[in-house]
Amino acid sequence: MDAEKLFARYRELQSYLGWSPDDALRVQAVESVLTPCLPSLIDDFYAEIERHASTSKVIIGGEQQINRLKQSLIRWLQELLSGPYDQDYVVRRWRVGWRHVEIGLDQVYTNVALSRLRFGLLGALGQAWQGDQQGLVATIQSLNKLLDLDLAEIEDAYQTEHWSRHQRDERLATIGKVAGGIAHELRNPLNVIKTSAYFLLNARNASPEKVTEHLQRISQHVTASDDAITALSNFAKMPLPTLSPFSIASCVQDVLETERLPSNVQVELDIVPTLSPALGDAAQVRIVFGNLIRNARDAMASGGRLTISGRAVNDGVEVAFNDTGVGIPADQLGRITEPLYSTKARGLGLGLALAKAIIEKHRGTLRAESELGRGSTFTVQLTAPSSDERNKP
Amino acid sequence: MTNTATSILVVDDEVDTCRNLADIFADLGYQVATAHDGNAALEKLQSSRYDIVLLDLMMPGMDGVALYEEMKRQRPGMVAVLTTAFPNHPRAEESLKAGVWRIVPKPVDLTRLLRLLDEAAHLPFVLIIDDDADLCASLWDLLTEQGFRVTFAHDVRSATELLRNDAFNVVLIDMRLPDGDGWEVLRMVHQVESQARTIFITGHRTELGPSLEGSDREAADAFCYKPFDVQELLATVERLSRLRSN
Image (tube, rainbow over all chains, first blue to last red):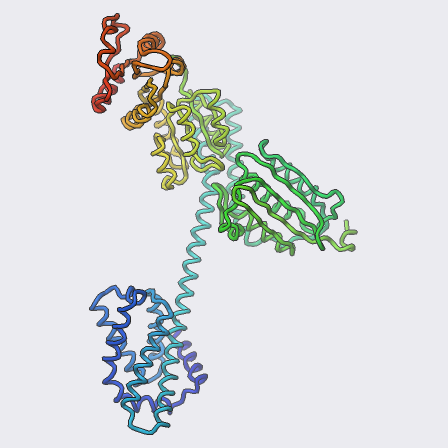
């Protein structure tokens, strides 16, 4: 963190609280009275820490560490009373918050700890005060401002550090997921390429047909590897859909023809014949339907029924893909459209994320319902073209 | 016994991986069949016999371990090799407990895999004919642990079938079987499997008495009395398995 920026921010907070040179003078005036009370304040403070599991757990260095911590707490309080409240002072406050993240101290303890110290300091001040009531109130207010400024600094540091660590962890987790996904998706084609190459190099009785077959297979799987990489990089930059009216029924038909479902999966089409066309990019919607149909197939490894129904709704068209497969556990249902999240043995975990992204760009919705052991229903809702658009070719 | 080529069933949901392995194995003289999921593999098992099954761990539906467990129930004599891209997956470890012989990480090192298949094809083969299923299961564990390929039959009928189809190094025969007696089986072993060495299992020493007077051809190579001295039994199987001239 940039020290100058930190200090500028501190100055801003000071002016927000109305901190003035008079406040600094008032605090300095009681420094000599309060300093002798500090050691007992601190002893009380650490005794309290040791009584609570959630705070004592961060102290792992025993007596020695406690002594070091007491020293730095004393230094902190002395600086608080003496100033100067300059850039170094602010940076040191910032480090306290940073350190709390480092040792894993819950942020609420910063608040209660400061409250306890404040209580001790003000109590000591009240006892030692020789002047008038008005002077005491003013000094208490000055001390409070100072403590609140410190607390604001420490909390700000805590939040900043905590957030940056959180982001770093998330980033690492994402990199891990992407790497795992790519590794998984590339390993299979590479394995095929490798074994075909092995056959070509080592086969003793390879017929010319077999040689051609293996060369073609190598070529196919180089393409498959390339596609996996393209799918991943395209995911982030899916082109905007070109919207035009298209027929849901023929779009579903096209996809079913390319997917070739196994014979133990029965397909039932229940699309209203008079269903009006939907507005969308047919090529992209085919990707969505393809993913939903493949998911349904994978959910029904030992066979089942896929029902695809289409009907008109308010101002659009709704297509539902219902399977009688294994279903999705309730705790996973919310995560299935996250990129790189997969419950399947194979695949990148991009299918539903891509489907969702495409449908959202169409201003449509993708809904998932599932019952474990019973099956799942994915419902896509798309808008219908306006009468003008319907007349376009 | 019949003297056919070693047969391998390759189970992998990656169709092309299956095809490639099939081509490579076939080129080396193995008989190869492929299946792309657990159910298809179990269906193949209904109509054909295989010496070795090479199966992938992660498959949609039944995974490799669940599939092997079912296969072992039906054909305990198949040697299973599991391939997986995740050799450290807990399921991979469970596969070894289920009786999988070896795990080969994916992508497969073919030189290593081919060496393993050759080794699997030449494991000394032990047939246990005993109606006590628990005993068979225990001996299966003990003997596979010792590097044998093991199968069992609980009655004369299924023993006959196994003896017709496979070449065994050692046959353990229980004296009393639900549909016949051990002597009958012993004679059959000597008929169809003249190279196999035989061990007679009995709970009563006296059961053997009169028959020992029969011709040498009919006598077993060794006798084992229940309850077994496991060490001694293993040593006997080991010794006899080396005697068979392949």
